[in-house]
Image (cartoon, rainbow, N blue to C red; front, top):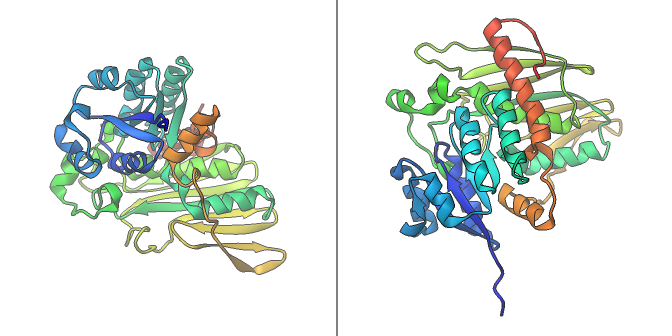
Length: 359
């Protein structure tokens, strides 16, 4: 019997705890294998080594040696937000597809540099947004595409968690502390920390997806000023579209984590269309639809999501096998509009005034 050739995947830079989640998806995929992992701090790879039985010869601290030795077809990058462009530019010359864990980048200029670096190699740049894979939001998008609520004219988004130091990979709980905050890149402005850069791209990118690729005209944003911290833990962004106002709110410090108990306000989206509304909340088993036939609201069970549309690794590998480009929030086209809104929000918050959409 001829064995099926597996896609060779390497994970480089473990700044973000989501590396563990993505490597688990590779480990569990029958058509993929982890050929290498790399981080300059060996201790950060211990969990992955133990969880996925990665042998010593596939563990590296030098990215060049990792890439030259393992020759991956896809590289997963999970660096701190401010370093996404640098790492993409370092890996791109090795002519491999690159999947960057959210957000896209710290700035629009960095996002454009990433797009250019990968475009030169004729490979794909993929930006993963975990919210893209929630059955509730997939169901909401299907209903939008079917015209259930007409054209989407408003997106209302609220999302976050108790904080980035309250959990590690696989949502395992951890104990935050002032000392950990002081050392974590999540709380360093120079590294791209803060709830706005961590979570706003989710809302603006999926919001752009729901709005069929439309961009706003201008943005107004405000952030909190936590004592003793150099980054925000709460941001509220209002975007003015030709169809009206949409709101995107990010929060580190929700009362509970949404994957365990939905906090109040609930994490997720409310979509307003010309013919109805949809509420789609993270992890919930139903979405609620209002339309002319059901003005009181109808609870609809979320779709049963089947492979390869249930997680990013399966989806990306399916696209590569079929010679297709990724689409939706994972595509640079949609994610770039999300980044435009993020950049404009950062400038608006800094200037304390409304700003025309950048870029």
